[in-house]
Every structure is written in C-alpha cells, then in structure tokens.
Amino acid sequence: MTVLVTGGAGYIGAHMALALLDAGETVTVLDNLVTGFDWAVDARARFVRGDAGDSALTARLIADHGVTDIIHFAGSVVVPESVTDPLGYYANNTAASRNLIEAAHAGGVKRFIFSSTAAVYGMAGDEPVREDAPLAPLSPYGRSKLMTEWMLADLAAASDLKFGVLRYFNVAGADPQGRAGQSTAKATHLIKAACQAALGVRERLDLFGTDYPTRDGTCVRDYIHVSDLVNAHSVVLDHLRGGADSVTLNCGYGRGASVREVIDTVKAVSGVDFEVRETTRRPGDPAAIVAGAERLKSELGWTPHHDDLEEIVASAWAWEQALRRRNA
Ligand SMILES: NC(=O)c1ccc[n+]([C@@H]2O[C@H](COP(=O)([O-])OP(=O)(O)OC[C@H]3O[C@@H](n4cnc5c(N)ncnc54)[C@H](O)[C@@H]3O)[C@@H](O)[C@H]2O)c1
Ligand SMILES: O=c1ccn([C@@H]2O[C@H](COP(=O)(O)OP(=O)(O)O[C@H]3O[C@H](CO)[C@H](O)[C@H](O)[C@H]3O)[C@@H](O)[C@H]2O)c(=O)[nH]1
Image (cartoon, rainbow, N blue to C red; front, side, top):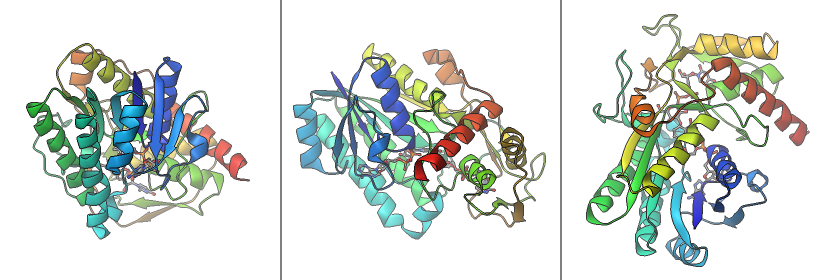
C-alpha cells in the first residue's frame, strides 16, 4: 500500500508526508516544484518530479508504486493571481485534477483526498459556515476547486472510488519539531508575512482594511495549525479505509482571530515592534469567515492539539528564523 502525495514538496503536503512516514506508511511524493522545494521532501519518501496532470506519468506511478490512496495537494493557491490568470488556475487546479482522478480510477485507486478551500463558500455572514452552506465562490481559485469537488462526487456516484474533500480555512504554523514550514518566498499569507516583517525580510506589513464591520475593523479568519490540519487528513484516510462513505468536511477550529490580533501576537512572540502600514481593503476579502467545524469532530472524532494562536505563531516564527539561517 502506497500513499501518493501530490504537492508533497509544498507547505502542507510536506507536513502530510512527514505524518504519513512517521505512522509507518509508504509514501511517494509527486511534485513539479513550481512553488515547492525538493529539500522539503523527507528522505524516507520516494520523490518523483513531475506534473500531477500528466496522465501517462501518474498512470505509471500508480501501477509501479502500488498506489492505493492519493492525497492531492498539488495546485495553484494565490487567490488574486487566479483573478488575473483564470485559465492558468482552471488548468492547474481543475484540468490537472481531472487527469489525476481519471488515472486514479483507471488504476484502481480506492481513496482520494482532495485539498479544497473555504473559498468555495464566498461571502460568509457572522455565523460559522457549515458544510451545507450555499456554495458561491468569489474567485476563479474557489471555482477551480469547487469543480474538482464536483468531479469527485460525480465519479464516486458512478464507481467505487471514495473521496474525502477537506475545505481548509486559514492554514498556518509549522511542524512542532521544526522539520517543515512554509517556505514560499513570495507568500501572501498574513502570519508568514508578519513573521517576515518581524525578521526584517520584508520592510513592513501592510494591513489591508480597517473599516470592516468586525470587532476591531479588521478581517476575522479561522487560523488552523498545519499539524492539526494534517491530522484531519489522517483521520479521514482511516475513516475511508474502514469502509465508510465519502465525506466533505470543513477544517478549522470554529473561532476567529482578527488581523490586528494576529499582528499583536506576532509582535509579542517575536519581541519585534515591526512597522504596520494601514492601507485600503484587498479586493475580494470577506470581512469574516469562520469554520463550522463540528462534523469533523463529532462524526470522525478529530481532536485538535494546537488550537492556540500563540502556539501557531510561535511555530511559524521558529520556522521563519530557521529558513533565514538556511538561506543565509
Ligand atoms: N495554505 C492555505 O491556507 C490553503 C488554504 C486552502 C486550501 N489550500 C490548498 O492546499 C494545497 C496545498 O497548498 P500549500 O499552501 O501547501 O501550497 P504550496 O504552493 O506550498 O504547495 C503546492 C505544491 O504543489 C506543487 N504543484 C503545483 N502544481 C503542480 C502540478 N500541476 N503538479 C505537481 N505539483 C504541483 C508545488 O510545486 C508545491 O510544492 C493547495 O491545493 C491549496 O489550494 C491551501
Ligand atoms: O500582508 C497581509 C496579508 C494578509 N492580510 C489580511 O489578513 C487576512 C488573511 O489573509 P491571508 O492572505 O492570510 O488569507 P486569506 O483569508 O485571504 O486566504 C485564505 O483563505 C482563502 C479562502 O478564502 C484561500 O483558501 C487561501 O489559500 C487561504 O490562505 C485578510 O484579511 C488579509 O487582507 C493583511 O492585512 N496583510
């Protein structure tokens, strides 16, 4: 039994590969290194450099490596970029996924876990968003992911493939043992950007919008520690291996932090009072989005272990410092 982890040289995929290897699984990582790094792939995994949308390659891998399960992280992840390059996002997130799903089906793969996103929901209200909320993505990124959700659901209805669709909220933090973290040079994510500002890697942090209808005027997000997120995948994999039905689940903690709260936490953890420039809203940002995350806990028994903003930030800060030493 081999688990194929696509995008396993990237931020979340590298953490997933570590968790699977730690649990004694056999892992093959497939990544084309557009945003990932070969050094991020643990030596215990088999690494194949290539494209997840390359049907001939994935068919060969599935057969030769005895792939029984696929966890599909490979994709393009920057929401504003999807607005300027929609076809690129439909190619890499939708068309490439279609090819991979087809190869999985043809190759007899039994389980397919897919990285989806809170962006499938669009504008949320004040309440936590449950999985049965209306799906109305605001960006090509969200739509490119939602179409892949639909492909999986349609194929599962017509075959014995089981899927786990996990809709991530805001993923942050790094491996508590310091073995992995977010390494993308031009990352746009708040916690990473704030850590870079604290370290002097970027001049300052821009705060996008202070006039939102939230408790302090800045956007509220549900930040989930990458290790808890990865554990959710392991729980879903066990669930599907046990013969249970396909699932679509939110991954978050069910409570939010504002941008100001995050900035204050990064300043407190790092001890650096970096410059924050308050600027206009970033197009497409919902004021608040928090996961209704009960199903993952109550139906699958997932228990978060790092549900603490300070711990998330501290692990991200430790990784950012290690990254600077690596790049020095
Ligand atoms: N980071 C978040 O907050 C977040 C939130 C919601 C969903 N997601 C989803 O999680 C997944 C992983 O995101 P991440 O933050 O680790 O991003 P990342 O950019 O660090 O990782 C993506 C990896 O996939 C690889 N890749 C991209 N296209 C590929 C292709 N066609 N073939 C093979 N490899 C390819 C990249 O080289 C990279 O290593 C993505 O699908 C993303 O949409 C992330
Ligand atoms: O330098 C920055 C970066 C971010 N922000 C703010 O911080 C909040 C969080 O922004 P991120 O870019 O960290 O995260 P998003 O909420 O935009 O995006 C997250 O949710 C999206 C779906 O809504 C996608 O799934 C995406 O991959 C995921 O990181 C937003 O209000 C944003 O405006 C800043 O003020 N300054």
